[in-house]
Image 1 (tube, rainbow, N blue to C red):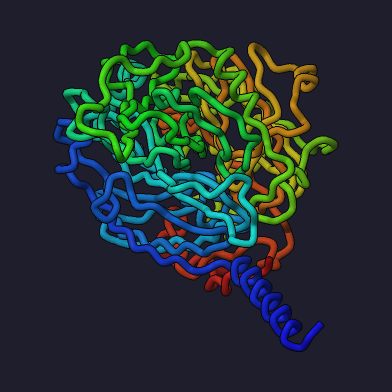
Image 2 (cartoon, rainbow, N blue to C red):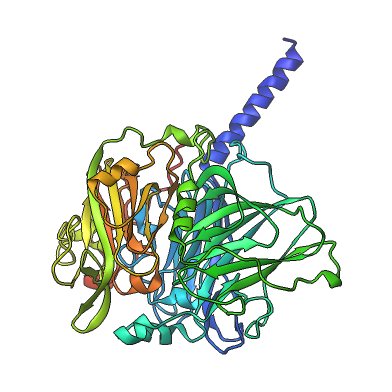
Length: 571
């Protein structure tokens, strides 16, 4: 090889290696959020307070790449405490940043606090939202993208553009008034949202709407829509008039690519679909209709937006009936579609090795939790329960107590019944042991008459099975152990069950909850404590230097608190 050719070859290798190492380390992203109430936005034509971030509703996009470090300095200008959680971001070795009541003291009014977390070994579409005080019903939610590093191939051609589409049901009153409605059985059971919003905007053509959501596309081009259900109550079916959708990703997993006429998206879930503008230049309806609920096309609970072709003229404005979707009560359709969402085993994601390198074909289970979600009544109050235990939120975050007093005086480890249902409904601070680096089977059993959704912080789980009726050990014969998709939020159909496997390799205190806001607020949650005795910070991060104290620690210094070390930079 000639000298000049060798030099060019070496330069190319060094350049590629530099890109790989730099990309593997990630960059620091610094964000400052001013969280405040704005009563002028009016998502629908009603005066109501809306929680905004930097004046925006929905909040700003967090646009990151695998392994980036995200710094979010949150200024709380509300009149009550605030926390944000990062739905689906796994917070590897760092549950201190998870932003739920069991891991963090709240950010008090008039103060600020900075989250620092790494989107370690993740790609995909996610969302964030307030996690306490029923505030998600008032706004404060927004999209998260975790893009692939440039050295990792994406299993589809680069789209012309990407759009974030946050869809969710919305109450048209003050979220504090809705929160008060949760205090009695009658008002809690009859609290039904008023409208379905698309990116904070009301349905196209509806009298309640100030404006509507519209996306402009060019004929012949393909676009990626990152769709998240940021609502409180309803799953929805999403469809675009005369257009097919190709499913490509969900919550950090590339899927086998399937072509769909419509897609069910359940509360807390996120999907990516590719849409090709292959119709005549015109405008087309985009529709999100609630599941398990009777509506008409004119209902405000049917979200409607517009797909606008750039060369369409004023005479091609969309009109006429909305495109029809599946029967909202058709469980078989929805369950079959859910079973068809499968893991792409051959493509890489956050790492170059195929996703299928990590599979569940021959795993040995270390634990099995049977978790029954239902309603209960305790001291005359409506509560939601897991195995007849309603979670009691305590003033001291569990993670704080775990770190400094081994949980003493705050919670009793493994008191919660993980495989049985208590005779009577009762309150409890539910914390269960998860065996570090063991495989756990979680079976979610839905005794409610509506669709429920479960989410596990800190992990992605393999969705191995869905079923109707009671789960039994024989139900395992129906599991898909070949290519179950990995995600962090899964639906459970009324009177049915859903089973998932998770590998508990991420030490921390992790929230396992219903994504239905009412259920979560009224107690349908627990925590899984995954502990590693090794004090090496490469095994689990110590408390951050800006750790907030509350509860039994008050404003004093917690024993053993220390500044957080420099971010870990290993590949």
